[in-house]
Image 1 (tube, rainbow, N blue to C red):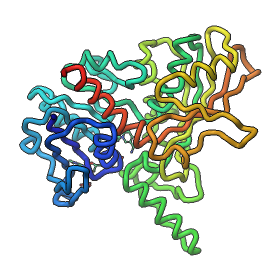
Image 2 (cartoon, rainbow, N blue to C red):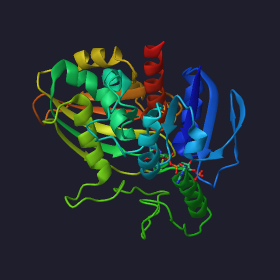
Image 3 (tube, helix red, strand yellow):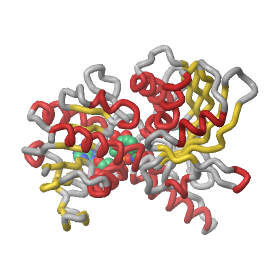
Image 4 (spheres, rainbow, N blue to C red):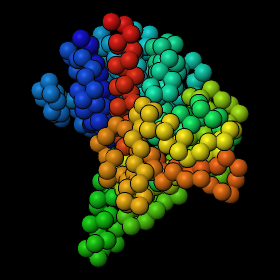
Length: 341
Ligand SMILES: NC(=O)c1ccc[n+]([C@@H]2O[C@H](COP(=O)([O-])OP(=O)(O)OC[C@H]3O[C@@H](n4cnc5c(N)ncnc54)[C@H](OP(=O)(O)O)[C@@H]3O)[C@@H](O)[C@H]2O)c1
């Protein structure tokens, strides 16, 4: 039995980590839930009973076997090295260590062996990266990849709990005939904010000098790191849409070798973490409302792209709070725990 901590337990990801720990059966004897001083003292109901959230300090994380960090990059940078040094396995949801060559970046269906090389910290990839790579990795392994172009349709919960509240408040205001007062998206700490209710914002995370956003770069660099293929051509456009939960992605792939759509369908249907939902004549295709709360990534709208050799389209949808964050992290913890038994 393990002493487990969730840092950022009151946030959008942290709440899901608590659920995933019990849903996936990580054996917990002692659960520490922490937050900033703002939510310290609040109660969280768990299958172990009610747990009081404590302020995040190293002293409350004493003797923890596995710490799931979900409180942002600066908290992770401060806590993770110290916890790792004390013998805690840190599974970090932030972007702080993802591109650190010493830190494995892991999606269990794709590269769980990398997690076994950890030096105390394992990084969970960006949510859009996880959802894309669960679907793309089996195709990459079988036929190779020449190029990948992806456009995302990202739910507001990807920007944290405040963005969920913003979509709700703005929607109510618009429907009541009032002017919404945007204050969270695209970036909470920025001076300029845009309405997300009944709108689409082509801006996730901050812009870089080359015109791409950091979210777009994260997808490119993280997918290359996980597949250990620095030469892979990837280009992304990331977009925020007025959906509460679950990200959708339109993905165009050009494989090295020719694949028929029937072969691709067979490979995807037998790959872990994927549910093929691809019967458009019956109006069956992946959608956020169907995927929310689930751990599998759904793939559909599979079709050849006649505009380029060996090209195809996929429509991929996954719950970014579950598979895109919480369950991916807990799956890693569970796999490493099972190794030690
Ligand atoms: N949302 C997603 O879909 C998603 C997916 C993958 C990865 N991530 C990453 O996961 C992390 C958490 O994101 P989120 O969306 O869950 O954010 P969130 O909803 O804003 O929650 C943030 C959590 O961190 C706590 N916190 C904030 N500042 C803290 C501090 N100085 N010390 C200790 N705790 C602090 C908050 O506590 P209070 O309640 O006290 O404010 C809250 O529990 C981020 O690094 C994010 O990039 C998010």
